[in-house]
Length: 270
Image 1 (spheres, rainbow, N blue to C red):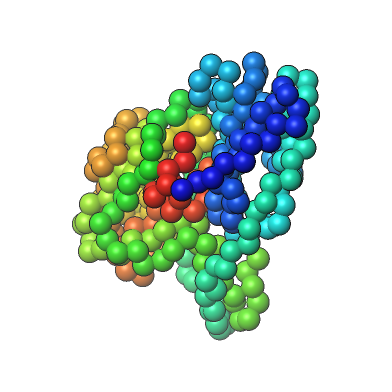
Image 2: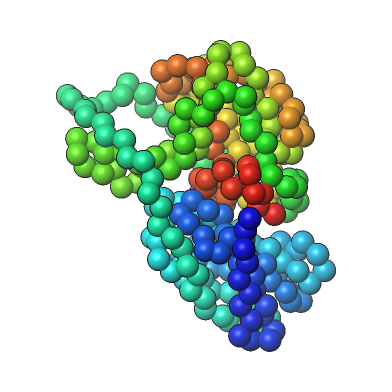
């Protein structure tokens, strides 16, 4: 269960953070009271706030294995008042995968400009309506074969910008993939159209900067523009793209940062 921390040193700014304490990979929720939406800044990133009730606003702040643990410096500006906060962010022991490369170290898979541009634009999706409510469902009945956040070394050197940006589910080819929460289909990509790394791909917009991407599908059962509900069939597990066997990769993004889906699955982030 998430705990909350109320920070109200200034009477015009009542702020609630959860979870408390947060750890790397968590999505931090900031709730605030006021007449206007706060401007929330972490480092060089500014995150949008959305009104969830009259005079109540919520901001989602993503963290990842690449975020520096310790104290997260957050600036909140609202109604002419600026408050600087130091929010605890715990480190986390992510698994480390050791890979030895020979020759040029190439995998044989190189992402095309087509998929890079499409997926980059997808991750920047920001629409004002929150479509989900409560915990997300699992998108597959398969067993989890790879967890979020796994780091890698190549020939003994840590890949400083790499972490596994999602959860993998192993299941036979053709097994159903369902929407984990309501969303609008905003990305459909096919291997034959240039998605040579991602494979057949579906991207859902859950609203307010939260998106899900599903990779390596053998089949796709939706079109761009479709509105789906939790549990609706969106595709079939496969091994298209950069894949060595049938599985689903589910990535959950908040404002373009891949966050841990586990809290969204079991606790819910609202």
